[in-house]
Image (cartoon, rainbow, N blue to C red; front, side, top):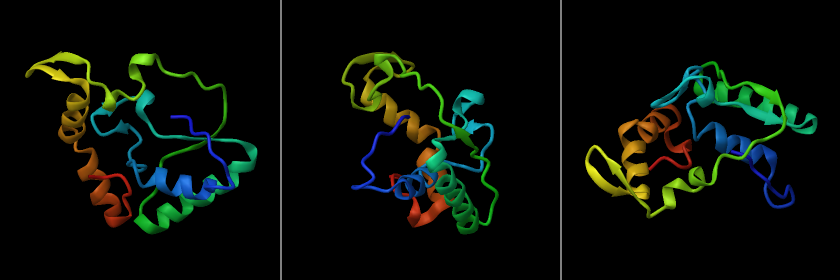
Length: 133
């Protein structure tokens, strides 16, 4: 996910804090059901953001009492995913699943629940997990 933001409105520190508490930054094999290098967390930072990113990771490690494996990498060229991947959770297109035809938005939430995303994030972060349902 690429995030564009206005630092006069929200700080990079606030965004990093929310990001690290929205994922499992202790898992170096991927995220939840999605496994492999393509699904590992990372922070791609500009030189000006690198220090804030490192500090956010140190704070997250202190809060969790665990090592964070999310690396801070140099920002590189970002390749946007294909259109059908954008806002998948909002789409009403019907897709065939093993349970029959379902709206994509419903499939997304079933997948999210089945993978234990929210449960894992809540177990790690407790009330600091901003997006867990």
